[in-house]
Amino acid sequence: MKNFMDETFLLNSETAERLYNNYAKDMPIIDYHCHLSPKEIYENKAYKTITDIWLDGDHYKWRLMRANGIDENLITGDADPYEKFLAWARTVPMSIGNPVYTWTHLELQRYFNIYIALNEDTAPEIWERVNEQLNKEDFGVRDLIKASNVKVICTTDDPVDTLEYHKQLKNSDFETHVLPSFRPDKGLEINREGYLSWVEKLEEASSVSINSYEDFLAALDARAKYFHEVGGRVSDHALDEVVYEAATMEEVSKIFKKAKSGEKVSQLEEAKYKSFTLTFLGHIYAELGWVMQYHISAQRNNNTKMFHKLGPDTGYDSMNDGQIAQPLCQLLNALDQEDALPKTVLYSLNPKDNPVLATIAGSFQEGGVPGKMQFGTAWWFNDTKEGMLAQMKTLADMGLLSQFIGMLTDSRSFLSYTRHEYFRRILCDLIATWVNNGEVPNDDELLEPIIKGISYKNAVQYLGFQQQSEYLKV
Ligand SMILES: O=C(O)[C@@H](O)[C@H](O)[C@H](O)C(=O)CO
Image 1 (tube, rainbow, N blue to C red):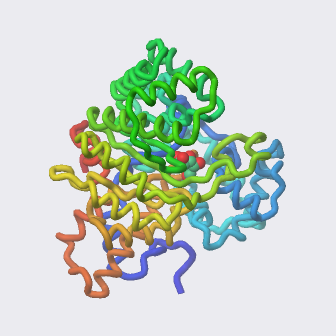
Image 2 (cartoon, rainbow, N blue to C red; image 1 turned 180 degrees about the horizontal axis):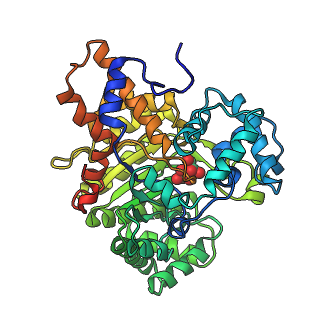
């Protein structure tokens, strides 16, 4: 029997240990999708307590606390920080089997050198030991990022954001590249409350007067080019439902005019608007050489009462079970037929779509661009051991695991970089299983570049960072 989370955890053979320790463990991190605050990075925010850094904003933990019957006041309410931590300490032992149980202890080990299991009995000691370290000089968020060997962070940003902190970071002595990702969801949701006010913000941010749909597209183009100037190389879309309806500029201009007048547009009109706008944006991304990410099939903000109280991304989301294959192929094909399909990462929140995405990706690969179309890493409810294995096995079954750009944190917590270690251990154990079964040669000349590629190098190449400073070379 293994010791609890020792240096061999998740590595079930000497082969796995060798592959992980020699080729994955020390690779830097490219976190190409997360929700960290560029402002907090620029200000090098220092957290005062383990409650602040662990429980503020992490809806993964909030969901587990709710499932454990913890009162909301001790989760997102105004309860005493120590009482909130005790409530989390009561929940952790109950969360065995959930990745957050593993990540919680990985974070205690890697950032605070604490190797005991968290529970109500150990909570007082852990509270003291962690808070003492958090209040030391070298425990700002920049120190945590540097200690995690993170070379690039792609935050998630609205086209109307000023990107002031990205620009200030670019001119600072902070080595990690903190780059904006262009996430224009609010400009796609034409029937959602707030759409028109967002168009006004876009008008102001772009300095483009928006009196027509063509003006709207010009404003989006201007903002994408601004993001590029600041260093942005990635776009991102939440396609909670995938729709596709061919449309003409004339048709969509009328739809936009209808929405601008304050009228709701029909479901068909909305589909035409989204299809044409996404196709236009795909052209821009391709011209800029960006990576386009589609995050598909989330069912968001299910709990109306709590949405009104806490807002989005607060742990009240789930998987959608919509049919995506046909509209997604039509959308990608529309771009590909115009030679305007950018490098694309396809994620679905519903693992039923794993083989659908892996095989659709295979329909649009391109010579000269290794791994152009990516079946993306296990996302959100799927970034578990089983979810990661399912995604990587499906990719290996139906495409090239070797060209996979690997893991991201997708997190709002500065301690979440241990998810990359978790992923790399699972990756190396999977490949080791193939080696030990005689399915793959025990040949490090074959395996080293594949493991280093998936852990780091593929993402550097894919995201176009390879021409950057020596700083990214390993
Ligand atoms: O980008 C998304 O839409 C999701 O990642 C969303 O932000 C979600 O709250 C999340 O962070 C899941 O890890």
